[in-house]
Image (cartoon, rainbow, N blue to C red; front, side, top):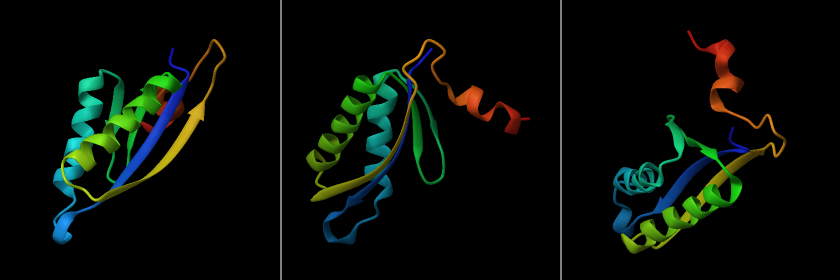
Length: 99
C-alpha cells in the first residue's frame, strides 16, 4: 500500500502567451513514464506512491517544462502522507462516491 497521495496543478508561464495545455500534457507524460498510479482531473492530477518518489516526479515535471521553453512554472501541491502499514489509496478515500 502506498504511503502518500500527492495532487498537483502545474501552472506554466508560456512564451508569448501561448496555450498552456501542451505544457501540461508534457507534465502528464512525465507522470505516465514514472509508472506510479495516477488520475487526471480537470484542475489537478493525483499521484499515489512513496513520498520521495512523488517529489522526484514533481522535480522532473518542472525541469521538463522549463526545458520545453516555459520561463517559469508554479505548482500547487497537496500531500496526504500516511506512513503507517495501512497506507492510503485513492480508491479507499473515494470508494463511497464511485458508482
